[in-house]
Length: 464
Image 1: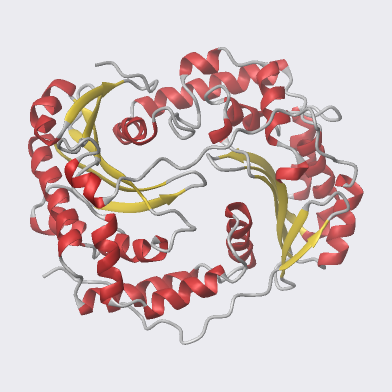
Image 2 (image 1 turned 60 degrees about the vertical axis):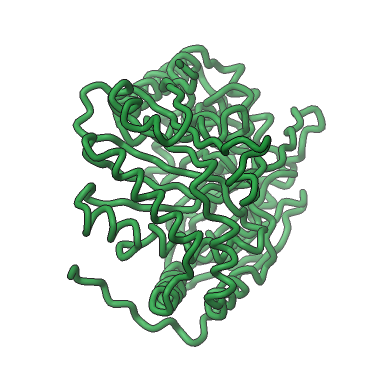
């Protein structure tokens, strides 16, 4: 019997360190966690407009890659030299739901760091020579990703779950698109994404909040939203079929599971993804789904890992996770398996989904998961940076300030009967997306029994 990691008892009480909320003169919210013990300042200026708002795939990611490559006051080398002098770092990054410009600096260099952060955030120049350098770096990055079976299967899964939706493209874009991006695209993405009305600032470290706010006012108070900036189009979450629709299909026909295949020549293994839409952060089922995901495939002692790794030997590891985004959430299983057993691996994943739909979890599974999740949450609140990250999540997704207290209370009190009701609502072997990267013709033969087959390419297009 495989050894199991010890599960410590959850804390009887857990109080998050205080975080403060205040506002700059221009209305931007400032979220802070003070910590005199650490001589550091970490800060992010966060916009709620990320790659999901791309008008051209990869446009926002390309723009953020260039933000620290020169401003109207400093060229790339000067900006790099000045932040290096402080021993700090200056960066910008982009994900689907947000983008941010970030600073990490010793607190003794707070003023110098804020000046550089403000310059990068307010006055990026996107110089042509840096555009060409970043373009080549991005093309190499995409080329490397396209040679990774795991990346390819995730692209195929994305097309099955979100094609035509805001999440239906890679954050980084495609090579064909990146070759055509220029300064005008960077300016358009910046104007669309970085508007004070959509921004908050999160900071942790050694400072006093009132003093930090005054310093930020000196740099950002004149920054106001441009009324002529492009409007972000609203989008509702993709519809999640009810259990009855899942079993019978919307039109009374058999419900459709989609098989999305993508070519990975000479693949020694098949990269496999199985996913379905599920409850979002504001849904009452969201926290129970976190528990069920942990039992299903979200920990080393999960059902999937025990089945596919320990019992069957199909894989070195399998994992599931809930990806909760602004417009939609999904539960995804990911693994690499020997190509000769790919259909058996899919069958076992479906069997574990059906078990969760039809059988209540055991008392031992529930209590072990409860302790594990409460203990894991405590580990995510140990540093001011972690706490401000949690507070930022509340702000980004519009969650109440007492959300994390409610999260812990829900974990501590949920019953088997309550959990089983969610299992029946949220788990089904119908309306899944099964994505695989490998030899398409081989995979088509092995997997067509599970649903209608489509073939996609690395650019997100349907090939066949």
